[in-house]
Length: 77
Image 1 (cartoon, rainbow, N blue to C red):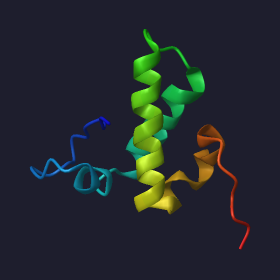
Image 2 (image 1 turned 180 degrees about the horizontal axis):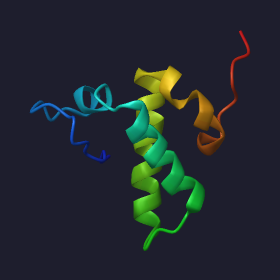
Image 3 (image 1 turned 180 degrees about the vertical axis):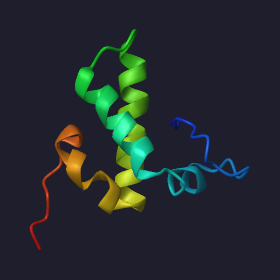
C-alpha cells in the first residue's frame, strides 16, 4: 500500500507516522481531488482514497466531513 506524502511529514517514513501529520487543509485537498475525480489513471484515485482512509483511522475528526467519499457508515454516537 502506498501513501501520498505531505510536505509536513517528518523524516519517519512509516505510513502511520505520515498519516498523523496531515493537516485539515491537506485532507480537504485530498477530498477535493476525490470529489472532482479527474485522475489520469485509476491508481491516482486509489492512492488518494487509501490515504484518506488511513487518515480516517488515525484522525477521524479530520475526515468526518468527507466520510461519504469512503463509503463508510457514520457512527451517530
